[in-house]
Length: 75
Image 1 (cartoon, rainbow, N blue to C red):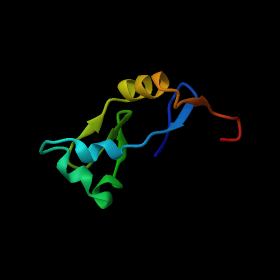
Image 2: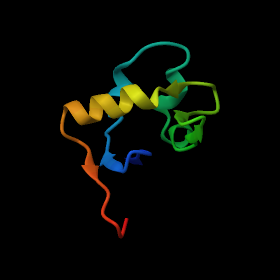
Image 3: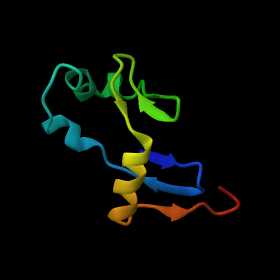
């Protein structure tokens, strides 16, 4: 999934590790159709069951592993 941030950074993040996580909130995300229903709520990736992904933590994680780049003016 390609994600853009308000600081002008953009990057692709693989969320397939969700399949190895456990818990009631994560279980629906293992279904590709449900996972695709993601939307942005108050800056966070959010799913219809209320599961969300902290945008600051996501940005920091992606930056730490070199997955972010500056958006080109054309993007």
